[in-house]
Length: 101
Image (tube, rainbow, N blue to C red):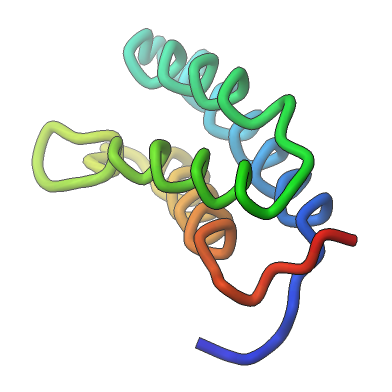
């Protein structure tokens, strides 16, 4: 991991944007489970304003990832892109290289 420092607000906003993309793709593919997960993720991040909250929310969100049958088990190029983008944001949210502003 690089030593680049990310602002909490910027990382949170990137995560929320990725969640919106996941939700849009899930709805277009009639994937109710992933759509509900996107709603849960949105609620998890919407009020986050500090490093501790972002790291905690990212850790909870990363619990959705795993093997077959998990959130990361995708069937289309569009959903793979959206889920990969979200995973990247969540990993950044868990980084020790966060600054509060």
